[in-house]
Length: 175
Image 1 (cartoon, one colour):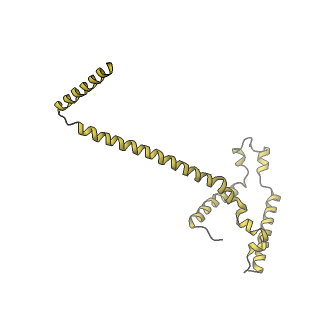
Image 2: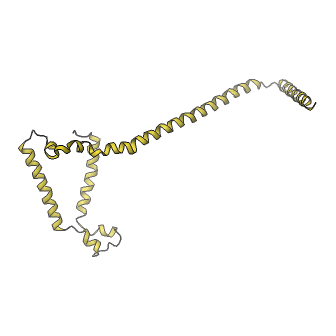
Image 3: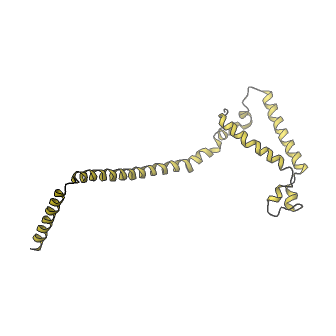
């Protein structure tokens, strides 16, 4: 295990501070019920949101007990790995994250990469089609540019020759 990068640490701090402040604000159960449906003062929602002394005390006792237990185990043998002491044979499973990362990889990451590869292949085909049509239009424009010289006599000669070719073709077909 190692510490995360500074960006992650500061992000966690930025999330923890408002969470803690909202937790303290929740100790006053007057404002939150007003935001909830049917949360007028004195209603069932109002009284169920109020902090209870027994629940708060039990939480503090449980947290303190767990802290003292871990601290004593660590203090008794500071060189030992507490993960081995507490997890035993379940350590590999816990270190593997209960297989959640592998499951997430199979369910989401691999299909997303496969879809991305398929989209890339389709994009390559579309890109080739667009480039091909652009190259064809450029080549045709180059041919037409050579024909447009501005010489009216050449245009009239071309129209006359074209008309003669069409006329001869129609006459040949009509026979």
